[in-house]
Image (cartoon, rainbow, N blue to C red):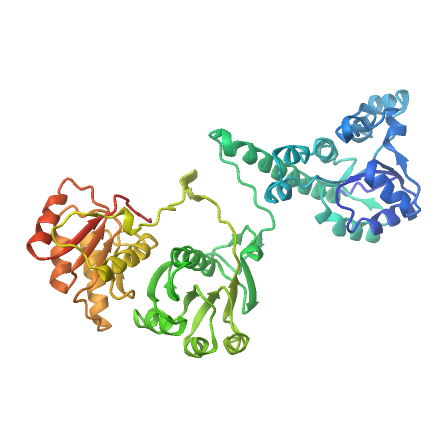
Length: 510
């Protein structure tokens, strides 16, 4: 069913005029009568094109400082009438209401106003009332009316005008209606979330636009999409498109490195969302070399991230490794050129942006929402529970290990020494298994665990972990505490000259 219609009239009331000029000129060329308001009316007049002020239709001026312009039966009657309904058409004639075939709207920029840090009053004034009403009315009556609801759709509408000389099919109008309701629902969601930041109404509303289809999802037989504004976070300077799994690893990398943002040069290598290497050193090159030493096998195909500028010396080290993604706040020009030598290597410059304060994941037939774990353990948080006190270097290693532990899949144990990740046990069903995995891995890469620090993401229900760790060389332990059998672990540490501190904060990451 094509049901082609030729437009004879159009109402144009927009905030952004960018890209509007060719549309207005084409509509005028097609003999379409234009109706408009305020700044849009002036824009059209300045193009030398005839336009009918909405006030001439309603016999009512714009009032309340422009808050009320189009909210009138003669406007909405022209949009909502059913052209095949005889009674509707009789009422149009009786009340001298013009038929409106096209409605073009671009809403006040509410989200941009909020993001700009504007005052509450300025934000309220950017809640569009007339525009959103026009969109809903025109989209509802898509059988007769075509609705262009955003400047983002100007180009597609212009191409339709040029291709069909103003004629539109029911399929065209329905597509634009769907896009219009996407605009209106997104707009209302943004407004609700602005108000709900203080009210805490128990409702979960998220609206993300500009989705991108990925090559595939977690596996090739799964479709995958990303909804968000990656361009705000990264400048992609080289390489193929980020995949679903790349994005998960990049997310893990960025969140992990956020813990070391203000530290000395730090480099991390991640694989499957977990750090397989991480080190803090006096230079970014040495930090990379020592991070790679943590697990050079797992580093193959990993995601690399630095908290400082990557220089040429570091790039020369990196270049010999096959890696999927490299992330840094900046690159020396010669380093960037070298890293671009691998065609598919993705190179990202990370920008400073604010991240959402909530984490969201699908669960059963709904979603789980929680506050992000924004707590980073510090020396001031620690409670010494053993007779033996950790040295200054051990304290630094304990905090270092704790930061990594927070961003490693549970159950996890992290072993670190001299601000270098020796190994971690990740995603195990038993804390003992996590510890044994970490020890075996560290020993396989010839780390000397004598004097190493151990971090656990949750308490030890029994003293077995501190005993196993101590026999492998661990001399200091950081854990949340809170087990009814904490004293058993404390007693073992006291008897074997091991220092242990409690943080009071659990960092599960499932």
